[in-house]
Length: 574
Ligand code: C2E
Ligand code: CA
Ligand code: CA
Image (tube, rainbow, N blue to C red):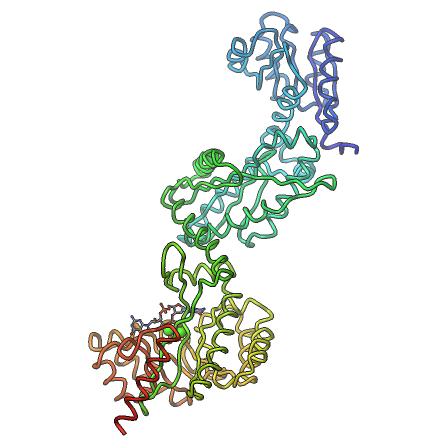
């Protein structure tokens, strides 16, 4: 395949010997993707003219070509060559001549002895890439687009802007530096051009998975950077890391061949790792180099604390994925007591995770992980399925009117097939839908209120009822929600537990109950632990209560026992 004009590397070769010029050209052309364009400059007379008028990206300078001293001439080259990088070629071994050459302005020094095509091509490519990022032509748009690069000034500029925004809004920001492992081997097997395409494909794949507020940039031949703005905590960052890791896990195709690549990721966060672009990039790079020590795709945070936290979240997420398959999830049931009859009116289904190593993990810990990873969607359906099964069991055991309440997360509304799937589950289970209640929070409906309302309507047409969970902690007033098919309000336990301690809690609870009743909604108070709280709620005509005072959430078998004990107690009283 022809190399596009804009990707051809143009070299100015300063050597007195035509033989050497041919030899260098031969080495460079061994690499078909390189397609170099060589200009030969054999003597000093042409040199001045070529330096100022010829088009070239890199100067290849044979050290015997000079008029005076090597280092003097080198200085002259770097100035007259419009700051194009100079690769010096000499007879002396690298350890001897490289230091003075580099000190005098050479970008690289190579020893002619044993010079092979790989070393030469690598040196030229490397400098060419660097030129794309920092050289005067870097801002030349055509080039940027062709290679997918962003020039380093522009990158720092964007990072600076993002840092300013984060500073103003009091947000955190994460910089991810991604470096493809073993790019050299890729280059050797596929050539530069194909490896380049592979890099672009990979970048595109990662880009598709990022949020709109994250920006992805290619900052080097085998390097990408992601600026993730508005990150709240390590969970957000782990989510981005997971996406990059997933994007890397699937093979890429080059020339119809599947190629598996791995990369090292370094993460530095603002404000922890610094507040200026240079520091942040330096620290992300340092973290990335540390990640290189681990085999395969790996990541490191500059900040050790964050590294531990993010690692924990990612492991938890991976474990949770297995938990569904491995049957480690279980439903517990907490009774809701009807204050008018003192009977069990319903049961709230509450998830428990029996982790094989860590024992029972609380839903407060794993539900957020499930929500952010999207795993809550399949888990949520599993919970509804289980609840339907238990509805059947309850009827079989002689408790036909028991309501089962299931928590619905805001994230489940993101699944556009939600109502359809819930309908299918209920239909297959063949249960009385009026006994299924879904609990949701105000925030669940805030994200896309119209869509949420439509879901609620469709589901309520199936006979399902809705309860507003954790009421009082959000911002909406009940009257705003009156057009929604909500039949029950659950007062958040934080208010109930303040009873007797703060007069505010009493006022709020009183107000919620009277307003809910005026809107024909029932009221459940959560987290009732004491007789005092119970008494107050009874006086205020709260309909139902749920709390440790009566029962903790428990496994199904215990629940059956609990129901039968209450039944026999009730019989004895009669
Ligand atoms: P929630 O929906 O507000 O559930 C009530 C929580 O209060 C439960 O915590 C319950 O055990 C606890 N609780 C009940 N009575 C008392 C009491 O008297 N005192 C105190 N201190 N706590 C009481 P749990 O089971 O740890 O669940 C925590 C949260 O996890 C739930 O809060 C719910 O938001 C979420 N969750 C649990 N299961 C599911 C589920 O299947 N799906 C979704 N999306 N979320 C779930
Ligand atoms: Ca609930
Ligand atoms: Ca609640």
